[in-house]
Image (tube, rainbow, N blue to C red; front, side, top):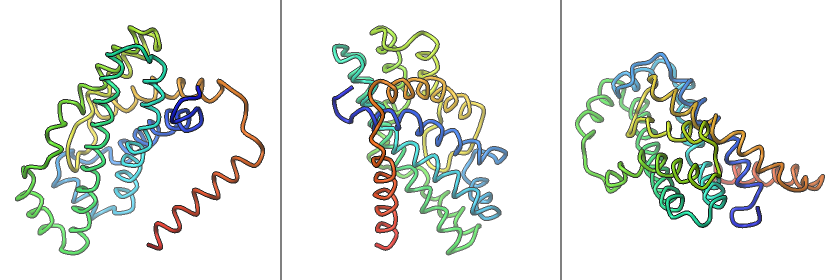
Length: 227
């Protein structure tokens, strides 16, 4: 694969992003899925809940090169193209939801649990532009999975597993339920083996490429945190 985003970006995305999303879902398992309990869980276990929501958000953001890699495997399919567009819009919406969840957790630290719960309760139904992407957020996975199966880029089992991502709840401060585990596990089943195949479909990187990439990544993170 030579097209954008390239074999390494696409393969690493497909391999790592679903695992991060599943880890994020599993880390907050055991707490009620509605926002008052999620805020209470953060008040009781801030490190755990921060790790949970951070892993899930990182997985959503990291997944976009993998979606482009999937679309690139069936360039002649309009169904795959539209499915990919819908999935990308859905990932943008989930990144927005992650930002709102992060702010809600900071309210717990700054104002206390009860005021934070009251603030979130009073504003939970407020309109935002990403609400218009709700249909794309869950339906995109079904369209993409169906298109990749029709194009014979995915077998029936991985395609069904990919379509299960449509069951992932949408919105702010969503806890873990059975559908969350099924959806993110389905992403792992569908995408991780595909990502490994993408990474193997070509020569290995030069000996200096991996440490250089790690050093650049560490530098970017350090500069971002200093800013």
